[in-house]
Length: 422
Image 1 (tube, rainbow, N blue to C red):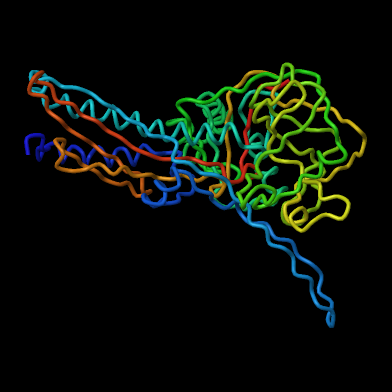
Image 2 (cartoon, rainbow, N blue to C red; image 1 turned 135 degrees about the horizontal axis):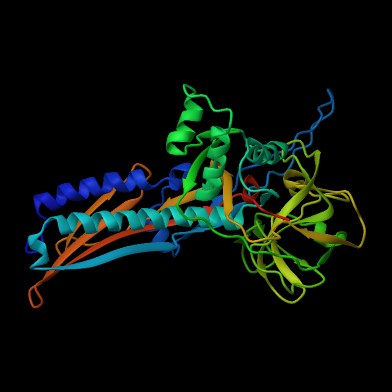
C-alpha cells in the first residue's frame, strides 16, 4: 500500500501511546464507562448515565408490615462531545530527518492528553457544588482539611478522593510542608523541599495543575425566596407530562431571585437559613449549603446546582431519598451570600464516582487510500493515527485523533477550593 506506515513509524506510535497514557493525569482520577460504538451512533452520541444511588431507612416493628419506599434512580445525559485532532504535514525534504516525525508526534500526543485533562478539570471546576473559600493564600494542612470536612459532613465516601491544585497553590502547600521545622530524613519534608511534592493530604490524592481555571468575582446584592416551591424541588427520573416518557436531568433548578444583574455563571453562594444535610442520615450539618450558578435565564431567574430539596410538608419518597438541605428559616426571602468575592485560581476536588470519562471510537476504513493505526489505553481511550502521501505536492499528511466525553454525574460529590477570598 502506497501510504503504509513503516516499521519505524509503528514503533514510534507504540511509544507515543505509552507516553499518552502516562500524561492522562486527571482522567485517571475519574470513573470510566466504556461506550458501544453502534449504540452511541444510534443515540446521536448521547446516553443517560445513572447518578450514585441514595436510599433511606425506616424503623421496623415486629408484627407490623414495613412500607416499601419508591427507589428513584436519577440519571444524567452523557455525550461524546470532544473530538480532538492534531494534523501536520511533512514534505519530502523534511522527511529526510526522521526525528521530525517523532518530535511532532510527541507534541501531538502531549496536546491531546492535555485536552482530556482540561476537559476533566473544566467539568470539575464549573460544576462541583461543594465550595470551600479561604481568606488567606494557600499554605496549610487546614485548608485541605476543610475540603475533607465538607465531604465527610455530607456523607461522601472517604475513599477515592482527589484534589487538583494550581501550581502556585500547590507550591504554597509544599512550602508549608518544608516550613521552619523541616527535618531531612523525613520523606514528606524532603519530597516537598526537593520536588515541591505534596502527595496525599487529609484523605486526598493531590496533583499539580500546569493550568487552572480562574473564578469570577461576584458582589451583587441578591435575595431569594426561601419558602414554597423553591425549596421543594421534587426529583423525578422521567417526565410523564409530555407525549411518552423522557428522562429528566435533576442536577439543576431554575430559581427566582430579586435580580441577576452582576451575576455570572460559575458564581458560588450560600443562602441564609438553608443548611446542608448528611445525604445518608439526612441530619443537618449546621453548615450552610453551598450552590453554584450554572446559567442566567432572565433578569430575575437563574439556573443553580444542586436543586434545593427540602423534603418539607408530607414529602414524596424521592424527596426523602434525595433530601439535601434543612430549611432552618421560613421567611419569605433570604439573602444570598457570595463565596467568590475576588478572582482567584479554582482548585477542584472530587470523589472518583462523581465524574465519568466516556471513551469513544471512530470507525475509520482501512485500505481506502490512507493508512490507519489505532490503539487503546488502559482506560479505553483510543488514538487513531492516519497517514497519506500527496504525489502532486510531495507532502505527507499525518493526523492524530481521539473521541471522548466527560460528565459530572453527581455535583454534590465534587467541589472547589478557592483562596484569597474576602
